[in-house]
Length: 349
Image (cartoon, rainbow, N blue to C red; front, top):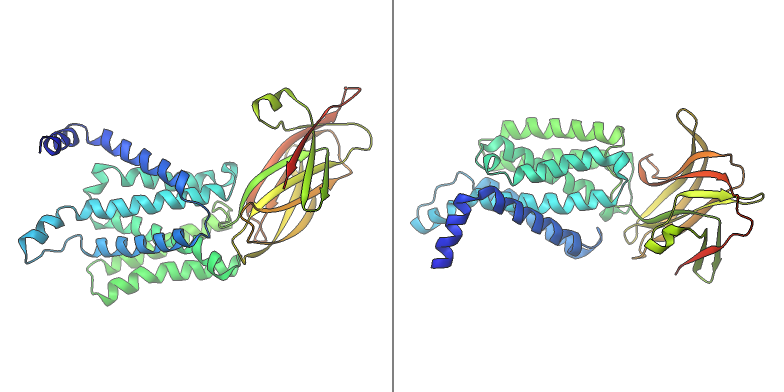
């Protein structure tokens, strides 16, 4: 009893501190335990959480005939925000894995802002509109992530289907149950679909479920019996386990880019590596197509190379078929001043 009393006193005295501790702990837990986007445990877990989130929203203002149930009702808002926070945390990690922050950082920051706002005691005490926004966003993110995994495809058509399904699901449920927030739900669903469509058109939404596990620039790549050997000029960064992003060339050298790309089992997608050079703006030099088929836990391995290049700042971007960036590597190209080069050979099995 002393422990319970002490816990209540701490919660009342430092509510924001406890929120920060639980928020950080839950987010770190998801980072280390969530796994890949196509794992059945993640899909079923998030499906159950979505159902419970909708159910908890429907019971937010409900009064019960039995006294013991009314005591339970005191915690309905906490339960709602617990499920919303758990879903937002997992979705943020999936989106983070699927793109570079330079492209989709704004969208990921939006999710993190919603996640932190969800933990705020002030927001938790607000009316149903804010909770409807959280609920609608969780539903939309769920469909955006898992529909491509289920059908094994992505692209404009799939995304539009996703938007329609996410926009009609909650209003239909609330209409069938004659909930008082039907009108608000319809307005929020339409507004959020429009915002997400803008995010898709402007490439702010990451290309889930794809993710690049490794990308780098090398002097040579050899493939033999499924094993790739990546040759990179030795650097002081090797001692720290890091890879530099400068390419020092001698006559006849080719610039190689290697990428290891994860896609769910049975997933098919036509990617391409886009070479670009900085000349007051990024100018496209080449597009090299890659057809991938998911299913390898460690990722589909692919590489491309370029013979014709010039000194300057370059980047290679892994792009999806609907022109969304999955990952990129930026590097400088300049002539080598070393007589004899030493190689660091990295093996990819």
